[in-house]
Length: 159
Image (cartoon, rainbow, N blue to C red; front, side, top):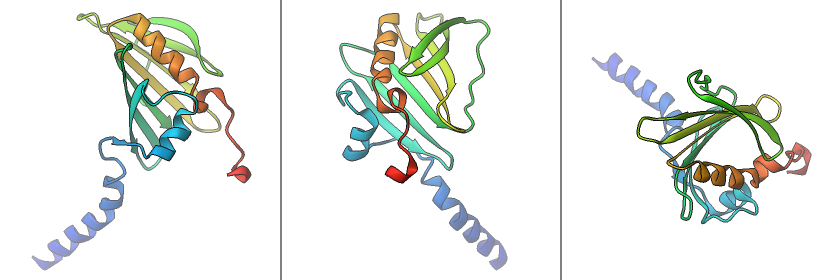
């Protein structure tokens, strides 16, 4: 019985550091939030962040007058597969040309998603959900003003 306990303890110790990095989103510290948002008001979209081994995931809830959610995955392996039943729409998010894949659910909820190359090996999977297209467009306009999407990254030597 003791060897099983030892193995269980070793497994728990090895998995603990990874488990705490993939927990449900947490509010972002003020300094990190300010860097993430740049000139965008923190009152436009309320953000939560989760960090995994090779990605950052953000969940945002739009505040009035907008309504809806936005999800961002920034990492090397997004899960996105275009929905062929939806509509493809070309557009931009800041500096980046994108193709949005839009689908309307039976309840009228609009789902819009895109994946694009950020820099180097990083990709962004961005998906939004709202009842009105004007809310989706408003959230995209906010995202387009964020430093991640409107500025080229700073060289490592400048950090």
